[in-house]
Image (cartoon, rainbow, N blue to C red; front, side):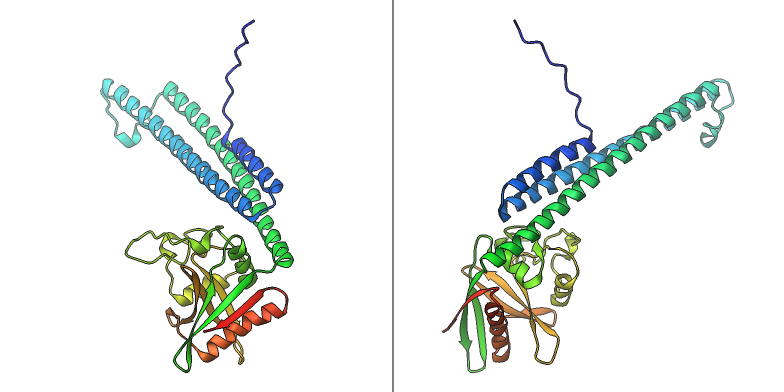
Length: 314
């Protein structure tokens, strides 16, 4: 007996689709106990969220266009009827002079559009709520995993000292891999990065410029991805759970007299170079006192059991 054809399924409303997408992604996040899988899910959610927002925007524009078209059609019909009657009213008074059937038609159309707009606004609100909740769960999951992984297996660093004259030095840290950049950012700044591979991302939107130190996300506008050092420090210090940093690790090192200096570990091929903020930029050749304080900061983290450290002077 031939199978009975199934009735075509009605497509999910965008709000219902958001619930389906977020539920499926979160099931994977909860079942796979790795940082990378959670970040992959986060990327997938970002893309789905962006597509959902685009669909809502297009639907709002369609309804506005439909409403404008109906008003224009009624205006044109009213003008045509008035012209045939020899009165030819001005365009702005055409709607007011429309006859009863025309006004009824317009009223019914506007009521229908108002209901559609109300339903769309409700659906959009539900969709945003689903995505907000999913993003919050993923961020919380990543923070929890970072804390647990740090406690179970502290990251291992190898610090390399290269003297430049009698009183200057260049500090390098051997390249790290896997989950370690995420864990180090959480250790140094108490925040999670917005992307898993942030430290090794050397892409640039302008081939004449080096890679930007920030991603255009998490509150960073496209025109703000290349701030000067003070603005970058302010961005790193700003409250929040996520840092959209790219290509470097931030480290705040206390000064003996109070306050802090802002260092960064800038990814440079097989090593990360230690730089300190100075004026609008960063400086890679450190004074003896700066290099000692930076090494001392890492040593303190080692003594606290939060870091494995090996120091080599060359």
